[in-house]
Length: 402
Image (cartoon, rainbow, N blue to C red; front, top):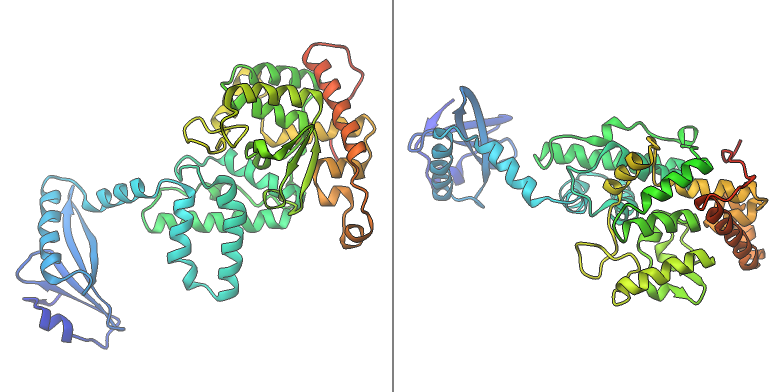
């Protein structure tokens, strides 16, 4: 490697027709100027720690001046002499700065998306904002587990299997980007295969399992136990349920705004007596909050991720394969077994495919099905109460689509 006493004049005027040239600073051992064929100039510090030769990128010239680069080189030298790896320290510092998946998404959109073609950029940004950030954005990047990812993708796959696969690919790309930039050490998405239509989960809990799960719910603190219960009582989606606001409750109807629903249409959910009792319980606890299920750590914000609580429920109930989204599928299966037809069930779940909705029905079918939905949910609530309290029931559980 050529060496030179670096000066601002030399750096400004130096150019090369080679792919890359590195020049060692004679005044500051270890400091290197790296010049690309395009003229980009970057300061790098070379050092050894634990017997291994490494390099640390200080920054680009002239954003980082020569004098600043030499000062930083002195600091890096002292770290290396103390057997502290500056590159590792840099990675740990970045990990402290990038805490959540939303933070990772913001950095990914700012630094990676501009490298993609415009149509791809727009597609990625839409899926990141509408699915990833809105649903799992508040999870710490190193806390996202395999089961978290599967739950998240399965909920998307219920209505849009291909969408689920696309979101998975983008989330994986985000983590790969994070690894390259030393923001995280592992890509958890790489352990999860694309779900696709053929791989969607069809687990439904038996009455005995429901009873054990309910007991386990009641071991959890508020509002975790109430969220689990509401999911089973109403059969609605987790994201929409945990963001429920008091202003969304109109007497005995829960009105989920269009912008909050995955189906992108206002959804009216009749509330059974069982559901209303639960809401009364929550009102005594946090009626001063905008949200029914307020976060336990953030003021006037909805409850966040429930996965740690779900793990405890699984252990306490001995339902070892418990997943939150199975509660919605279980509610739907029982209602179907009790005679609720496919269209009404689809309306209860706000599931376009199950309800047989299309552009034609959207125009001509103006019937709101509120009475049918109310009967279906009330009957299911009565049946659920019987299961929980040990009343004898004749209902059998079967898998949707069988």
